[in-house]
Structure formats: structure tokens, C-alpha cells
Length: 287
Image 1: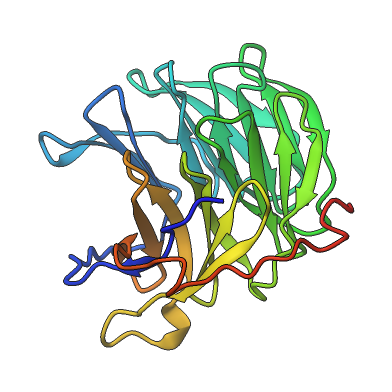
Image 2 (image 1 turned 180 degrees about the vertical axis):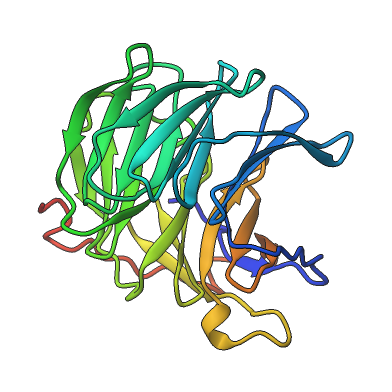
């Protein structure tokens, strides 16, 4: 099992404030672009060299809750309260597809270069696999019993995890076979997930809780609580987005107090200072 995964908040964070509820953020690895989405129905492309908005994508009928960039194509995917995942050509701003089929808000999405190219999670409790070439549904996963608010694709393995109020589940790709539950006791709505190459998965909740999990076993080895910005209410501690940096040793969180926070590994943590007492439950693989 990976160890050294005790994460702490970096001191003297630069807090970034927004005028609206920011629900999605993605930085391109192929261009100098950053993309943002919000509850104001806006999807924007920022040029990081010019430090300004250069494109806006119009088409969503309500708030936009998630976005993702295709790893090899100049394609942006956005999902929102209008129950549709929209596929955009980044440069022309044209909508290539409207992936329709969910019965409620699309609140999580990720994309990959091979089939299924797009995977979406929704408040309708389902996860859908999509063929981006034809804009058609390939598979629908119905294992969850409550809204699927967050998903995390493992960066090197053919698997992903999804979070709902009932549980965290892990699935295989490309067929979507069920692996096991993560037996979450986080006792809150999980809005965000991220996993790095070392197999450390982080989940962020509505109550500001941040839990860390071992990807292989599903063991929760650390529990943390975010710190709200001075002057904010405790109820504004919710975590809405999580992402690791390219090294996998820094974790970035977007939170309800209108801040972006950065977390790092505690270099002083050892197996002695933070012992792992893990006994796999007998029902780990039970559906």
C-alpha cells in the first residue's frame, strides 16, 4: 500500500475569489487555455498568456456543473442542469453533439481517447458510456441508488470510481464491470474526487471533509477538514472540485467560500506517526 499520503494545507495560500458559483475548471495540456463553467450558464475559455477570456460557449439552458477536455482532440465537454452533456469544438465554439439521455442533472464527466470516449454521471443515479463519433449511448450503469455527483478516472489503470450518497464504487473499463465498494462513511454528499498515479484517491464533501483512500483496497487511511476563509460561515466549507497537479503530490480544491486551496504531502509523516490499521471487511466485494 502507498504511504506518505498524509496531506496538509499549504500555509499562506493565495485565495482566489469569484463573483458566482464556479462549478468546473480544466487546464489544457495541449494549449495555453483554461476553461471554466459556472451556475450562471457560462462556459469560458481563458488564454493564460493574455490572462483574459477569449471565447465563450453558449447553449446550456441552465447552470453548468462539470466539464472535461478530450486528451487528444480539440474538444470540450460540459454537463449541467439541463440534463445534457454538450460537446464543443474548442476553436470554432460550435456544438458538435448534445449527448441526451439522462433524466436529470449531469454533474460529472470524464473523457478518454478510446471507447467509451465519454463517461457521464447524473442525478438520475445512472452512469452512461458514450461513443463520441456518433453521439450515442454505449452502456448505462445502474449500480448506484442515489445521485452520481463525482467520478475519478485512474491516470494509468483501466478503471474509475464514482461517488454517490449511498457509496463509492469502483468500475473497470471499457465495459464498466463492477469491482467493489469503498464502504464510505464520510456521512456527507461527495461532490468531488481525484486520484493520482500512486493510487491515492481524495474525496471532498459538502461539509468540508476531505478523505483519502487507497485505490487498490478501498481503505480510507486519512480524514481531514478544510479551513474556511476568515469571515466565512462554517456552512461555506463545502468542497466542489478536486484535482492533482502533474506531479501527483499537490492537491487543489475549489470550495464554497469562493477560494481555491492547495494541499501538499506532509513530508514528516511516517508509518509510526500515522499507523495504518486495516482489516478488509468480509463484504468488501459485495454489491
